[in-house]
Image (cartoon, rainbow, N blue to C red; front, top):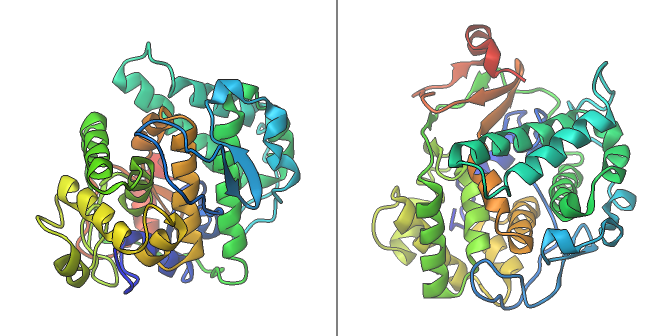
Length: 355
């Protein structure tokens, strides 16, 4: 990352998606991997506040970037603009026992849970994992999307709309490019716990103060690239670190340790400025990783964080899922491989991690 050389685990996700292997953000299918959206440019106010532009564009839909509780459902018309076309491998037939109501109930509970300031950190993180799994379930039952959308209350509507619209845009960008043959192996990665939520947030805000790049974009990049630093491993292009830089790019723009979260986050902000941030975030993100699906993924997540910074609580808890021929497999902290791992054997030995 920070690269015209198209490195990085975020880049790997695109490259491997073409070969049937990907890091799964919302569901088990490769087409459901990355998020995409239009980009909002312009200046942003201080960390945690809404954009000075009151709307962002997601799939050409204007979505307000204001606190969730103040936005009526009717102002988020994503149900009428998002299709349910799925990429190869995405299940669109509802399974027995899975209903629009059951999916909606889980999404609502999770979205509210990650914003519940009375909960312990562990309690909030548990809701974050449920949030990720609920959207995965919706991705596997995309025929229910319209019905689920109608069940979203006002306080959840913006977050739901951005997450779903983002995922759908990725499917649209991937049309005709996704391999129908999922990979038989899992990646040679090491999965570690992320840096504590407050420490990462302090790093994002420090980088914003130094460069003007909104912290929400830096958090979104960190999420898409390595799940907030959970993934350690070299990309197919040789990119390294939690923000995934090619060492050659790092040497020209950044200082410190490419593997250190603080240094990498500050380095990412510096690189984004060199590509046009914060005046033109679309151009800056495209310079960071030249793929519109990637730009959309980061933009959608950042837009959700701008609408409500408490969304960060959920994203920080999201885990690593990889699509494979053996199903979508969760790679928990402690997973470590120096060479590709047979997916079928791993699934047999870790049935609880197969979704």
